[in-house]
Structure formats: C-alpha cells, structure tokens
Image 1 (cartoon, rainbow, N blue to C red):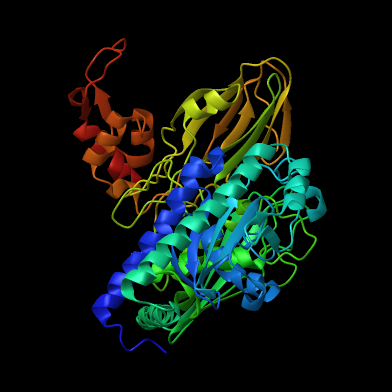
Image 2: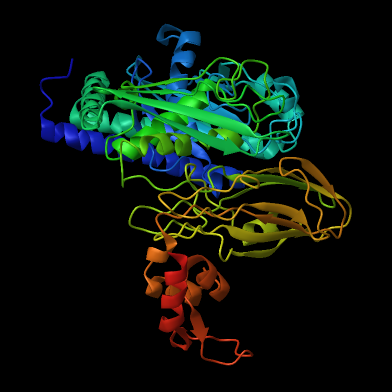
Length: 575
C-alpha cells in the first residue's frame, strides 16, 4: 500500500529523481568501462529494484534484451540469496542465459543497498563482456558447453572483499582478461554510484523505505497499460516472419490476442530449436516481446514491473524462441531481434496506420581477431529501419536494439583493422510513399602481417525486409570477400593477410505505394545520394536529370531537376 504522506506532486518529483539515479548509474558505467562494447556501443542496461526484486526505474540507454531480461532476472538472485543472506558490500553476478539476457557473454551484476543495516533497494546492470572464452562469439557451437565460461549466481564481492578465486577463474578462461575483469569492476562501481545517489535522495525526502513509492509507481504503470490496451479492439491476429537461419531458414509464427485489458503473444508453430547457436531462451523472447508491445501501444508508460503484468508471452518448449538446455544460444539476437517485427506485423490489423514497416531487425555483430600484435575486437553495425506511416525510415539506426556503432578512429587505434569504407548504401531503402531507411557499405582490411579472422553474426541476406501497404522491400544484406567469395554469413572466416571483407547491412522496407511519393522528395533523395537517378526512375517513376557535365566532382542541388513530362508518363504506365 502506498505511503499516504506522499502527495502526487512529491511522488512525481521522487519518480524523476529515481530516473536520474538510474542515469547516474549508467553514466558511471560508461565512463569507467574498459571495453568499447560498453563504452562506445552502449550494449548495457541499468536499473533500480525494490526489496522484492521488482524493477522500478531503468536508465535512458540500454537494449531491450538487457533491460527487460534483467528485470526478470532479479527473482533468481533473490531466490539464491534472500535478504537475510546479504550484507553491505556484497555484490552478486551471473551470466546464466536462462536466468538473464540469453547468452553467456552478457553478465548481470546486482548489488543490495543498505540503510542503517536494513536492505532498502537493489541495483543491477547487464553488460556484454568483451570475451567469455570457449569458441569465439559465433553461431557455430553445437551445444552451450562450447560457448564459454558459464557462471552460476555467486558473489563477486563478499562484504566488500573481491572473490579472488572467481576472478582468477575468469582471467584464466577469457582472451581479454583485463577488459573483462575491468568491466566487472566498472559494473560494481556503477551500482555503488546508484546506491549512493539513492540514499541521498531518501535522506532528502525523509524516506525510510522506497517500497511504498515503488508500489505506487508500479501500480500506476499497470493501470495506465491496461487503460491503453482497452482502447484496442478485442481480437486475434497472426503473422509469419522469416530469418536466414544458419543452415536452413527459420520461421517465426506469431499470434497476438487482445482481450479486454490484457495482451497474449504466442509463438506456437515457429521453427524448432536449431543445432546451431541462434537459439533464443524464453526470457529473451519475453524481453523483446514486451518491448514491442510497449512501443506499439503505450510508448509513454514507464517500463517496470507494473507494465509487464498485462502482457503474457509463450512459446513451445524446444522451439527456436524457447530453447532448452544445453542448446547453443550465443547468437540469440540473430533470431530474437525479429520478435518485434513479427508482433508489429500481427498488430497492424489492430493498429492501422500506427506501425512502421519491417527493417533490418538483427544487429550485425562481427568479432575480429588478428596477430602482430594480437587483438580481439567486437564491432556492431546496423541497417535501416522500416518506413513509418508519415515519415521515412531511419538510416543506419538500430531497431529493435539501440546499440551504437564504434567510430573508425577507435577501431583503428585499438587494433590493426583498417576501415576502408563506411557510407550509406544507395537504393537500399525500400521504395514507398515513405522510403525505408538505408543500410551501409563497409569494408575491412588488416594492416598487420599474418592471418586474421572474423566471426560474422548477421541476417537478412536472404530474406530482405518486406514493405507495408504497397511499399517495396529493402535491399538484402551482403557478406563477401574482395575476390567475390560469398561465405555463410554466420560462419567464422579465416582470412589471408591481403584479403578485404565487405559487410553491407540491409535496408528497411518502404511504406505505401512508391508512385505516391512526392517527386520533390525523390529529387531530394537523389541530391543526398540516398537514391540513384536510375533507382528514382525504376522504383518511383520519377525522372531526375543532371544539368551539369559528367566530369563535375561537385554537383549542386539546383543542378538536379525533375523531368515532369517523362515522370508523368512513367507514373501513368506504372498504374
């Protein structure tokens, strides 16, 4: 029951302070992290929990697969270490995929916070470790035991003293011991920073406990979510989404049911779990499914324990979205990131004109290794998002995962990799009344002698992002070598010293009939280099002419004009 002495205005102030506490936690993590994965790509999540392990607030940055999976992981921490077994200075951790974020590279660190000897809150964060041993991060493992060091829930710090045996085991089993252990200390420091800020806030407002505040915040969020769901028509909608898979395609079948103030999402009929490491645990499936429903129906409602309650997510045990131990799961994002698109495709019937077209979906993750000097570098790349009902898609912007790319200068300063090219990919956005976001063209080389390798975990090289309501599909992604070899896009490649690797993430699908796009917008796309003149004529029925000479290196906007007569003829023929 809420504390009656907290009036609504004060509650709002406290709520915003909790958000700032979580953001201070996140900022500390990013400033102290050793790895580029956390520091540059922000592949992380931070959150505040009450004494019952219910998430109250989360940081502004972070991926749904981390934040929402971390939210459901706290029950496992408290089951293993109930409050009476915890003391000031204790810090817990685990990377068990079935308890947290679905792969052993993601380590969750949880810290209990005490006030005058009494537990008042918990802080937690999840980060992608630079390495966890086993096979290099890939989709090639046949069972989870091959994928690296799996840590059950245990103490990283006991009464403020580091667990030296655990740290020795970690150092002996990973390729980048300083980065991995350094990030564990950063994860601990960020929870401490959040805890200090929380205790200061509690002192300022005279709070002996935040549980009554948490109860009110969670209850209000649940009520707001249920009110939003009631605005939808009751019914059931289906969709089918395809992924490249590893050795064979993967199908995700989604059934969304809206009944009064609850949403049920079922993935029955989806592919069985794979023999390769692209399987998804139910915790990760639930994380992205709950994010998708929030984004579609109630984007302004805080995401916490209360907003989870009206959404039920199921998938058959042993299926690709509810893999059972010891299934390999290291590359679960290659399939799991399709979950929001599958839900959006189903909900399009209930939310006409409100949802965007499918996009690139899975992030493109590549792990590079080389010699002389030795290095291991993880790089995230993203394609384009799908077009929206009244806006173009976003180019080279991640959705549903919001990870950031690593700047070329950072890549080249920390390794012998050379980024020879990074630019937007013309014509890759699906044509439509609103254009899909563009993918990228990137090339990698290695300036050091000796062999090197890359493990690519990418998708949409066979099944491009479809358009919506007459929009055209985005361009499929590509993985190939300079000599033309096109390997399995999820395989680990051994490379010769002089080889060049091309990674070209896909574009997003278009929205609406391309021939209904304003010709002036098409002209602007040609000026910007987003669409080629050939693509404008082929896909949009708009003839764009350049009035300058062929050898001009600088082509000014006014030199590109619309041939209105040819355009009218093209669009008539295309009707």
